[in-house]
Amino acid sequence: MNELSDADRLIMYEAISDYSLDMKEPELTGFPKALFSIIRPIIDANWQRYNNGCKGGAPKGNKNNRFSKSTIEVQPKVNQSTTEVQPNKNDNDNDNNKEEIVKEKSISLFDRTEKFKNELIPFVERYGKDMVFAFFDYWSEPNQSKTKMKFEMQKTWDITKRLRTWERRSNEK
Image 1: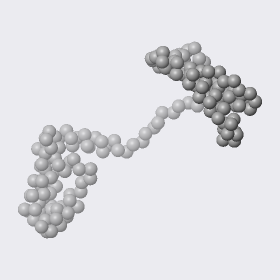
Image 2 (image 1 turned 180 degrees about the horizontal axis):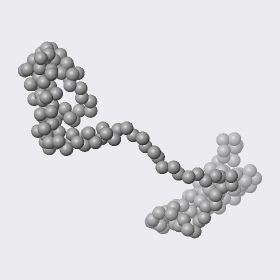
Image 3 (image 1 turned 120 degrees about the vertical axis):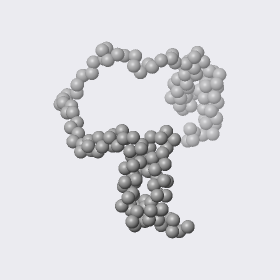
Image 4 (image 1 turned 180 degrees about the vertical axis):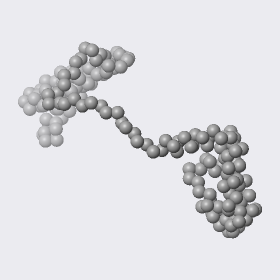
């Protein structure tokens, strides 16, 4: 439309607006008539969509599945070989770890607290009884449901590194 002369462009704009807004058939000749014949189906389609929307639009429900698989037979493509699905053989070595984790969760909170206390005994000599006891009190605190201790809720846990950090922070105070 940019390459039309100003007069032809004005005629086209008026023809498009009159036809699309009022459905008035334009009286065109020459090139504008040919151009309008290309534009008219687009306007008609949009008018049809508008009228259907005024009537309530498309019916409710999923129309994508209106044809059942029994009515449509898919023909296999030529040169297409059939492949058999092989079950995935999972050689996972983590089965024992999962069993150990389940066993640990089935142990009572009291027993797990005692186990945690026994794991801290070798560190008493290095860090002192008071610091290890404070460390134990802090990290053995149970959650609200009393199913886990604070240290069990950590993503990563290494007693040696945690005690080293605990000592460094207590020295900074």
